[in-house]
Image (cartoon, rainbow, N blue to C red; front, side, top):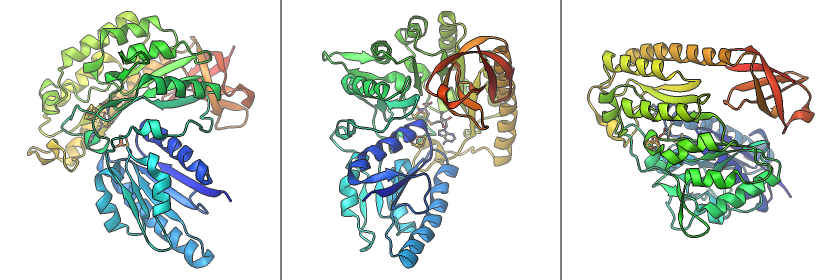
Amino acid sequence: MTKKLFIKTYGCQMNVYDSDRMTDVLAPLGYAPTSQADGADMVILNTCHIREKASEKVFSELGRLRMMKEHARDQQGRNVTIAVAGCVAQAEGEEITRRAPWVDIVVGPQTYHRLPELVSRADPAARTRAIDTEFPEEIKFDQLPGEHAPRGPAAFLSVQEGCDKFCAFCVVPYTRGAEFSRPAKGVIEEARRLVGSGTCELTLLGQNVNAYHGEAPDGSIWSLARLIRELAEIDGLHRIRYTTSHPLDMDDDLILAHRDIPALMPYLHLPVQSGSNHILEAMNRRHDRDAYFRVIDRLRDVRPDLALSGDFIVGFPGESDRDFADTLSLVDRVRYASAYSFKYSPRPGTPAAGEDLQVPEDVKSDRLEALQQLLNAQQYAFNQSTLGTRMDVLVERAGGRPGQVAGRSPYMQAVNLVGDETLVGRIVSCEVAEARQNSIVGSVL
Ligand code: SAH
Ligand code: SF4
Ligand code: F3S
């Protein structure tokens, strides 16, 4: 009998990828995905620990799931298995079992290939729990099933995990563990399977994806640029992206790939976090603002139409008005096509959390607002600059309204088009007819 599996995903693209892989792992056990928690036999929360808000959400969601679980048991005589996966599971496994004893399974990002075993060990009826937050010896990717459900026209593919950079604000090195690059063979095989099932755009994922140095089929070591060159040879794979990159690892090879590989899309997410040298140093980012500018300038030399995106943190401990002004001036100089910005959130166990000189909440709010105003204006200006131009759009899904479809431009802009669902999965040539704050409207040529 098939059982229903509901997975709720928080956090980054890597978690989106992992959620799909958990679905694949559980398929042989008879679990089929469903789109709502109500009525599900198993609910997995795939969680994010990056900021306080993200991890607190998990506990309020667990409160709701407790009621659902009790209702199913008391009213329908049915057991619901509740699992917490992802980065909160890794960081706060103990805390979860203490605060939410109705959770049956706790599994970290590096052990979800063991879910079948954990499912058989956990027994909701007998209140037996299964917990696995190890960093195992075996390579998770080698243990995951080859078969997978089709992922759609644009899919993620994890090639690198973990992080050795230890930025002073960040939990990722603790929740995901040490940097690890997947051997190229498995990556290529997975890419081929995805393309065979209808995917034509791949986004290669890693917390530090441009630090990729994976074992090649001939035993040598491949850089990310080399891997991309190989993947670009796959018939039917029309678009390649990668995220997230660190400025320090943006080597010449990769920069030149943006000139030489037509399938590599003209969009790059390159977080800088701050424009102040003093704050960059305190953050342990290991480069200054000029080094960032040099990377950007070289990229734009080889690919003038490259759209840039970034991440920013305001209110890092010790950030003065002058430091913040440096961030604004950096943004001014770079001109982003889109960006994400956050108030600094002290995270347990990270060096910056214990520092004096925490910035008051209202100052953080004011700075965030000023920064977002500037970034929004830049995004709008970028969208406007594409007005009247022609571009290829990958149609990914039905649109918000009947008779509309939605997709992405080469520059990662969200695009709405008039058209029917037969266009989904196709790359269509469009003229940009309208430019808005967060999207553009294309007319099919
Ligand atoms: N590996 C990526 C970042 C992953 S986290 C990189 O190196 O760029 C995604 C973003 O969350 C970061 O770029 C940063 O802007 C933000 N972030 C991370 N820790 C944070 C914290 N403690 N408070 C606020 N924002 C944070
Ligand atoms: Fe976090 Fe820094 Fe590693 Fe990115 S590079 S995951 S921000 S520690
Ligand atoms: Fe969050 Fe973990 Fe990703 S902390 S951002 S889900 S790596």
